[in-house]
Amino acid sequence: MAEMLDQLKEQLLARIDTDDLLEVDKVNRYIKLRELDMACNEAIEKEGATITIENGSQRFIKAHPAMNEKSKLNSQMIALEKSINFINGNLVPSPSSASVEGKQGEYEPSDLI
Image 1 (cartoon, rainbow, N blue to C red):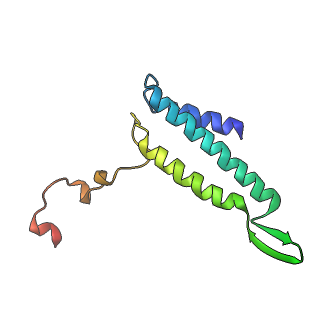
Image 2: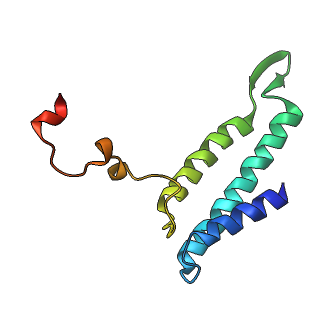
Image 3: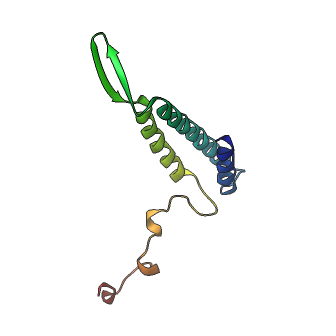
């Protein structure tokens, strides 16, 4: 797993201006979040997606706490992906990059037919 993270870090660093320390920091934070996500995966695989809580005579089942953490980590990773200034194309396409049949700007009424 560490090898995969090293390769991911290399790929991300190849796509940014490594002289920009803020961008390098974002990549490092992204890799750390990915490490935490993988640790959550391991805990869930080991203990299962649900856990049993015993409180005196009461017993109930609830979702593994790592499930909630994975959701938070995912949101943070997506936000970081969007904020990283990639120089060789974005990992996350911007909404303005989509166009109808490659056209940009004004459309003719005949385009609707």
